[in-house]
Amino acid sequence: MKHLTRAAVILGMAAILGVLPAPRLSAQSTFSGRSASAGLTVGASFEGGASMIIQPPDGYKVGPIFAFRFGADATYALTPVVSAGLELGLDSRGTKLRGLNNSDFNNVQHLSYFSIYPSFGFGAFRVGVNMGVPLGGSTVVNTPSSSTTTDLTSDEFSKVEFLLEPRIGAVIPLLDDDTGVLSLSVMGGFSLNEMSDRGNVSGASDIVGDFHMVAGHIGISYQLGIEGTRKK
Image (cartoon, rainbow, N blue to C red; front, side, top):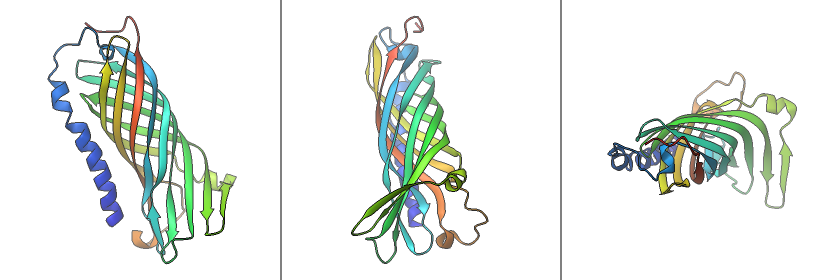
């Protein structure tokens, strides 16, 4: 339960940060004449943060690991307040599992996905669904004297699930002129499916674990305005 609460806090903070700036931006009724965001913008973004599963199986503790996303993205203004976005890129995430009685021994599970993230913006508030096609993965086993990294076997990789993750948060413009838009993003997400297909696992979540993932990111993006697309 405490891990579920932690996940709710992460997503709640992202939602709050997304909602707070929206009233100020939604008051706009016309596009700014020098705003690149008044049309189509195309660029790149990078986000860093953390991810983990919701609850470990019996005998383990769960911990977050560094997670990141980067890729190419585009945004198109539908109205002065509403925009549509699409991001294509790499999404790397996973979780850490440690022995309940011996934290010196742990393993870190990494997964990477090709991410397709369509979204809609309402002022600074942004919501969308991140869809991830598995690309690969590895497991790092750490002991007090060594660290060993092994790639997933073909059988293990075949069990990695397609990522389906609603994401919510804020994209806040720091600079918006006739050339482009520099933005800060604060986003959180919760996967609707588990990391991998574990077969017919039955029992309470505190025994078998809950391998749905929660992730939070803070990032930066820059998009260039495309001439001829800007609305008046």
